[in-house]
Image 1 (cartoon, rainbow, N blue to C red):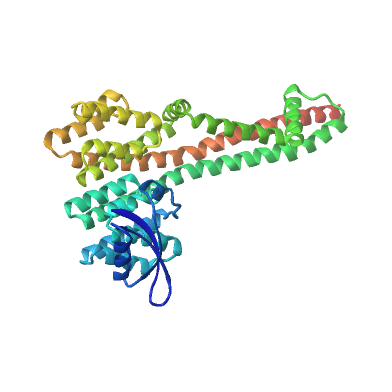
Image 2 (cartoon, rainbow, N blue to C red; image 1 turned 180 degrees about the vertical axis):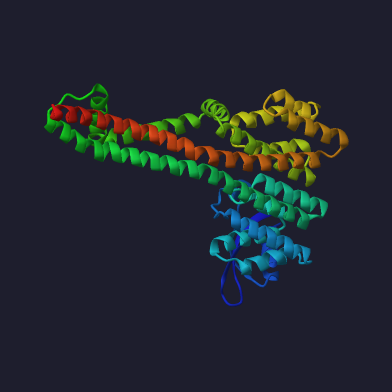
Length: 401
């Protein structure tokens, strides 16, 4: 069986492109003709080259909409290929239409839906592909798609909460930097002219601050270059395994934010593992999929270590305990689930717990970030004000004499 990329025309002369499996060129022409098309060109492409073909990427909202619609059409009794062709007609833009057309042509060519999705790794994650495959194997594709839709909605909500948690402190920090920069580059230089004209000796503290102001206002590009080099150095170091492991370890130890990072990781891990296990994916494969959802290398290595222990016959709870990265509560709940045969339910309870914990921690960050930033800004502005008023008081005393 060969895989062909073909070009054909319909009765109106419209160009049709697709992918199809066939034993030879004659069978390919017959299959294309049975679809009502006239074959004009084709070529054989192997599996590896197919993966190199550049395809557009679906946005997360588009994947969610596609998943919900496909599940609804299949539940309504439509054959898979007809459901996909219906979604092609309803596609809202050419990018999404092109992806669904490619999936439909692969299914039409003999691929399973799982195989068709696997050619679009930028749009469909390993978890998505694996659960679709499990749904096809068990005859519960529509239910698997419904589970995936719920999971995608949860992911989008989580991402929104994470973005919200990061945005607010960042905005406050930018405001603080802006105010301080304005004082240092615009306000202090004007007072320097006043002090110079008064011909008085300045306190050491004020002189240091004026020198900093002069340097920043005249050589600001050096500061920009330093910041750029620091960012570049961070990205370069983070690109190495050793560097990423070290930095990810530091992140977990950050006050408040480290707690949030760990809770988000545990939430993703437990939710993904529960979904994969409920779909019928074996535990080792489910652990592999759950590991890929983690962005922290230290925690990712802990899951990989736990998977090796499970592969050697150890229970999941004991394997996670041995890594030292999973809280005792999580280990206990998973242990109870393993003993009672309700691992999926236990994992979902863990996910529900951390879902609430993430929201609680984000609220805590909001509650603390504003007063902390205000205090820091107050200290900086107060310091600058003190540096200005000390010479002014000195000038007043001199004039009073």
